[in-house]
Figure 1: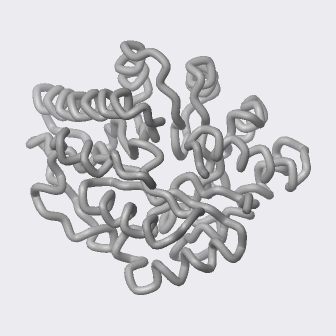
Figure 2 (figure 1 turned 90 degrees about the vertical axis):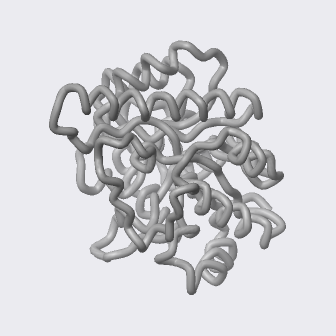
Figure 3 (figure 1 turned 180 degrees about the vertical axis):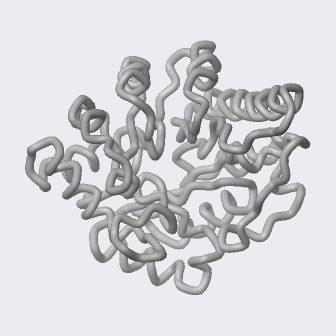
Length: 275
């Protein structure tokens, strides 16, 4: 069965969904929504794989260490208990450990990985350490993606120049810049590199119309980033809200809802080799 939608970035593997996760994923499948549960550290990556293994098809996992959970030693790690119960070892990128779980059958990408400069260390020296530590882990995870021939899911906030600088050292990488909020120039550079752009409920809060208009249909992916960035006036997001993202993009691009659904689903199944 081919899905109507693919949510290319969800976090049903987070604690906030623990009591209802399986039921919610079953409901998504009944509504012909496939999804990727995206890992943000070792434990959430393992949970994503466990969930994927409960289903014959339609639920997939990614493995990665989010840049904000890289222990740089210069900013306090802020862990939301609605996300995960962390152990110190879960927040260390151990190449061997991550490779072992990333090699599992239902893992379709390395992510989310990248750079995030939202927090501002107080001194120039600390800022440099903060950036360098993130870059080191980003590079290790890109190496893992290359070794396993997997696409990547990039998280980039206030760090496009440095992300581009790292990526220029790699050939034939494929993947998506998730929750894209950059400018038109940055979007064009990403497209020129062969990557996709992921759009979610943030398009209801930030005007990305010009970006979306200038992004070819065959390079757009839909995502929710649930439980965050709900397109409705609600506290929590789920993959069932993906249709609202589709409607908004269809309106901006002046094409039919069905065309956006069809093209983005094809894009997702091709990029992530969803079976």
